[in-house]
Figure 1 (cartoon, rainbow, N blue to C red):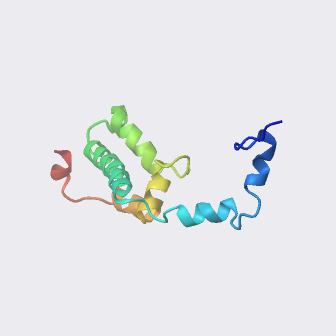
Figure 2: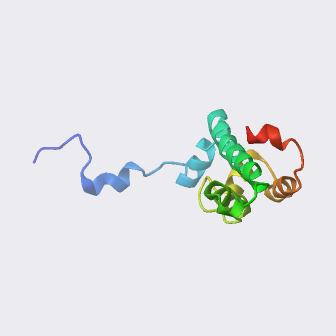
Length: 117
């Protein structure tokens, strides 16, 4: 019987024998703590678009009939952390207090004409 230089299926557990690092330790050392600059820009763009859409349509005669407004309002008010693009997850990744931002948005009385453009 000829010896092969390739590991056999039964030999796979032996390949990792003696390794002094656990998978969880490797993952933590390689995972960045903060999003990269490109990821931050994307998350900020998502947040900015939702806020602008919400404020642009909030003061219209019938905002509830506007599909964009309803979608933005639902996203901004959602407390679930389902996925990387949920409102809470985006705020967390950007280091923003979600409740404080919501309060600021609801109390916004500033330059709406600039936002509407």
